[in-house]
Image (cartoon, rainbow, N blue to C red; front, side, top):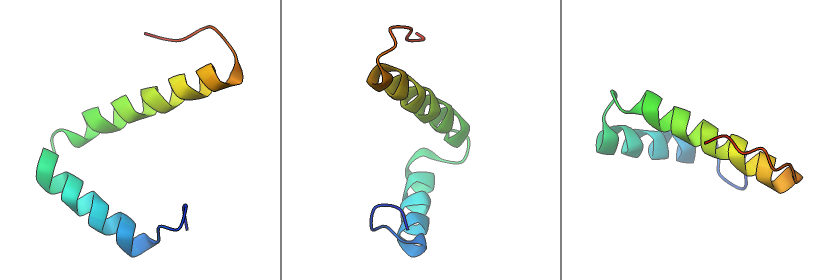
Length: 52
């Protein structure tokens, strides 16, 4: 369980995202989300090296 969200809720969210953006855009969205999380972790750890 992640923050009170169980597996059924995650599946519903994934299906809604799939309907809105389509299967072709999911890799781009995932890559962008991964870069955002990476940059957030770098910023919160105090390092000044942020990839653009």
